Image (tube, rainbow, N blue to C red; front, top):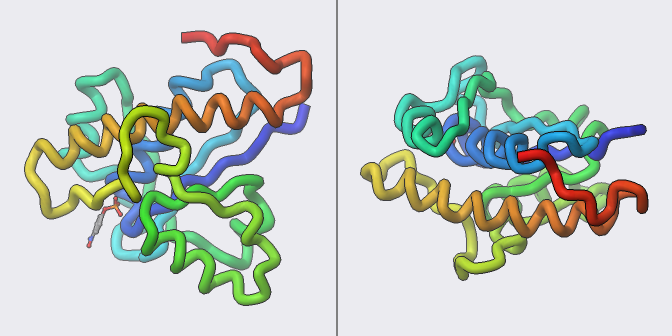
Length: 166
Ligand code: 4NP
């Protein structure tokens, strides 16, 4: 079966979007999803996630080992089925790269999937203290649960309603 391909996008691809990918991969174990992350900027290409991001994630059971890549409009708009921005700036940067609006239907904002936490974007934790990194994970765990439900509704019917392995 063809997997649904999801790309999470933030600015640097070393804090929020790799965390989103880690949370989603764990939550959706066993479902036909292919999950990656990218940044709109290229400052950190090739790097592991920020050590603070990795350490906070590890405490919740997420081992983040991705390497930062920059969002490439020439490839990624076609390659992914859903491109999910962490905040409004990331979303508007993605929209600006899709001048003909050919891929706007693939774009969404991560926090629109939140079920409990009301927030208009995943705040950039880069210049924050430990509480900023914890807050990112709280928001992402909530949003990923909502995203999973949304995806299950668009999966082929035999997989619908099936509980992912945990
Ligand atoms: P991210 O956080 O977009 O969640 O990966 C940031 C990481 C690095 C920088 C900004 C935000 N930076 O300016 O280097």
